[in-house]
Image (cartoon, rainbow, N blue to C red; front, side):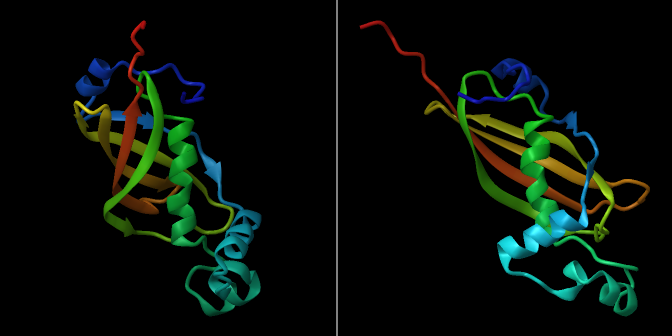
Length: 164
């Protein structure tokens, strides 16, 4: 079962929410430590991410910036803390992205949050549910977002066991 602390969302309520904003996550700081750990995990140590002095001197950003994929990866935790899970969903799976765009770099120390619009929901007789979100990661005090995308997800609804 999904261990989300949020109250499960009945299927009909989810269907009724299609086309609406269903969540806005809390602000989250993207620290240099987080960027450095992501660089270590992905072996992407380009100076624009991990060398504050050089990034300040040689880039238009005034310092280091987060990897685009780091910003993207934060969607999982922001969704977990913001979006109510479907009632009886046993698991959720990333299915992919459409129209992913990295619009504005996230500077080290910036605060970001995610805005989620439920764009589409298709419940299959098999118990698989396709839920697609239009997501935007906003940067505090920035007119432009860090990224925009259509996030494709799958959930599996656990079937109730009948008494034998």
